Length: 332
Image (cartoon, rainbow, N blue to C red; front, side, top):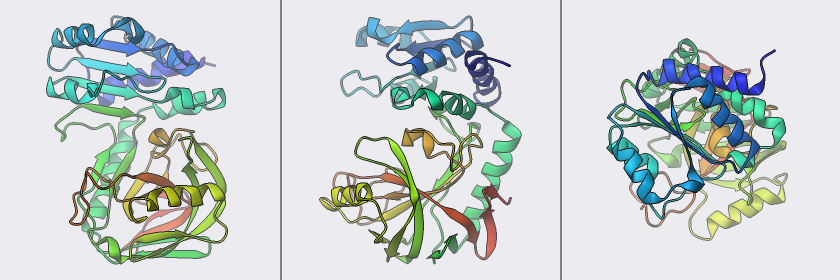
């Protein structure tokens, strides 16, 4: 049976070969502040033995800029981060894309306990046939949809609206201006064009609390009226705290409809970091007015602060009466 390090190397090699379609130089910037970052870095050493590896704590902003400038368009830069690398307000990945480089980020690895290491490594497995089939199938259906129904046990949510152009994150960058992003991957996301047509109830089973870690709960009810969410009587106190935080600056608006499809994650097998866990198979919604991808009248970037994802305990999702998702699987 392969070790976690061997498994990581295998899955990383799959991503490099079949998602990134990478054949050029690789630079890996890493830290040693968590056991998982060490494990993922070892996986990259196995997958790209000829790559160049730099310990972040030994670098300066100037030395890293020199490293980036020495690369050729199409080279790959990987960041393996226990938290998030900071160079003042400098956004490394955006700079790399501007240089025509491929960029992959593994973030907040220190949030994951040892019991979730294997799950995280499994999320890096890349099967292009699976992702292309499910990802483009879901995107195609969302592009045509004019309504959506979400059924949880005992609740119904209905959206009477077409959707914004769905964005796809399935490791296929051939149609996209940039190659790479934050890993793991596996999601198609959009939002209704008319947010006020979101009405009904859903059951929520997980969200990130004030400590930024995802916690699971017995599914509890939330009510959405004209696109604004309120908690049901059975919602945990931690959820009320999140809603109160959002309400300090803005309404609890439901915006993003995210359709996760990473098969390594599902209810009962999750990750503590929401940035990774939002790729979990099933539906998540975002709460708060912030969404940098979809621009809408009435939502000004400088005045909206929150985009908090919650995982929905959906049993069935339909678009225009046709089943899209049921029993933990997509129908495409």
